[in-house]
Image (cartoon, rainbow, N blue to C red):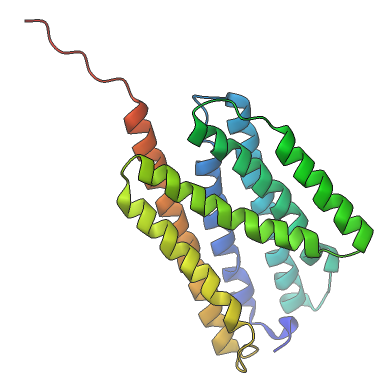
Amino acid sequence: MNVNDYPVIMALEDYVPTLLALAGFWVLGGASQRIDPLAAMLGRAGAVLIGLGGVAKSTWKLVLSAFGHDWPWLEQSLFPLMATGALLVLWSLTTTLRGKVTPWWPYALIGVAVAGAAVGTGSLQPAFITATAGVTLISVLGAVLAGRHRAWLAVALFVLGIVAVTSLVPLRSHPEHHTVAFQWMEQGINTVAQAIFLVAALLTVRAARTAAAPAPREALA
């Protein structure tokens, strides 16, 4: 099945996991607010960049399926935006885990190296690798943060989300991959995975804030 054979409703549904993921990255990216407001601001900006990448890809599918117009720049913007956003979220999340300001330059250096490799090879593969590794590492660090605050349900959900997303990889080589029914199944798995990720992020940040809240003063006898 070609992308322009997608039902329009399927193209519209593709926005759902994108927005769920955006919300999850926003929550985790802003968790460093008490430690470093700048890191939190840029972490949220990173979440927006990841979301914009997903929205661009979804919009490409929608325009192609509804109107037959192919705007490849929308599709190709996915991984560069995701890679950049993931680095920003990772910087903020690392700051949250360390409990102190984290140097920004290693993340900037990685970003420059990825951009240079992409330009040098004329390929989006470096951005694809960075984006994929980055969003996976965000879930791993999210699970570490959740475990630190004994939010075990969140840990389990982060792991489940990683497993769900990873399970999509072998499905792409399945003989039925290009059928409408199979595409619906894949999108359904992705939607559930991103919903799980969002819930895990919310539980984690709630646990972290509860732990950071000052204990109530004991009443004077």
